[in-house]
Image: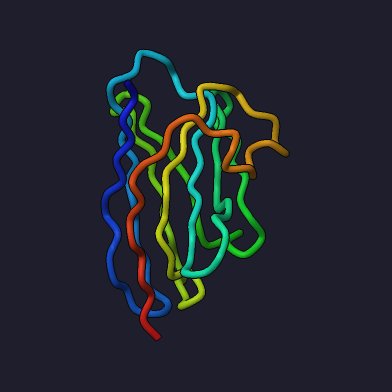
Length: 127
């Protein structure tokens, strides 16, 4: 049974930075695709950034391009979301999602494509 745990969220001022972590345990496979989603109150869960096994090419939604970066430490089975130049619109619960498959790009954006999810972590950006 794979377990996914996020850490590092919290409150930050507008323009500030925050890094959240996603640690996976309990599985023997190498994740095919790892992504971060977020969900603000009253809104649908949306894709933020993702990375696929191998080349490490990353993909991000337009609203965070140039500000958010996903990276990984394979030895630690941990992925990171570095968030810079945060603004109040980034306030949401952030979720780490893992798929055992190497997803095609269009599938990466769908929550249904992922097998394992963390419990979510709150990120609040004060104005």
